[in-house]
Image (tube, rainbow, N blue to C red; front, side, top):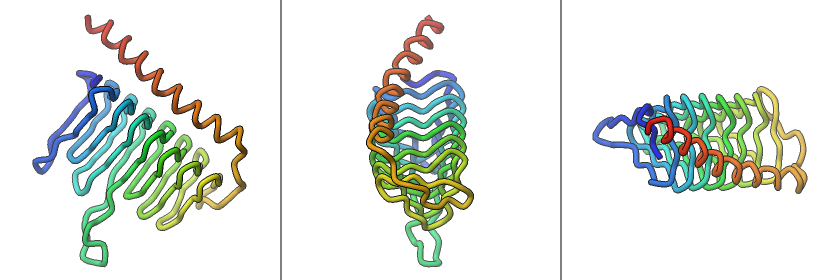
Length: 188
């Protein structure tokens, strides 16, 4: 469900493509070449700008309130294709995170207020802690927790923590359905 109070804007002839089962909350702004997958959720007041490259958000991933996502334009300095922002399936992105020209693999986790910069990657099962800043070109390996500004490997995640991340994904899929239903009831 796409809220009528969300903004979907065409830029350079490219319009956001939203799966019919995805949730886009009021106040969210999606501009240009943005793809949102099945069961994904884009929460209140997020800005996702695919104006100079593309942004892809995979199935069941959630982009929580106030998050900003952008990409990197093609450049002649060895980056002719630029850097899209690619988010896999079952990814948790905490409130007010900032993602720019990076890759979050399936089941990655980015904490509240964290920053993931150009050419960074968070592998599946990897976690960037709340408030952390992953500087350009860094890679969080699967099962690792990185924290700090700049972020560094802190420790490996436990099986219980990884299971908690899976529960968080399932929670957000169901919570998005509940919010969509509540918003439809208000509009009726």
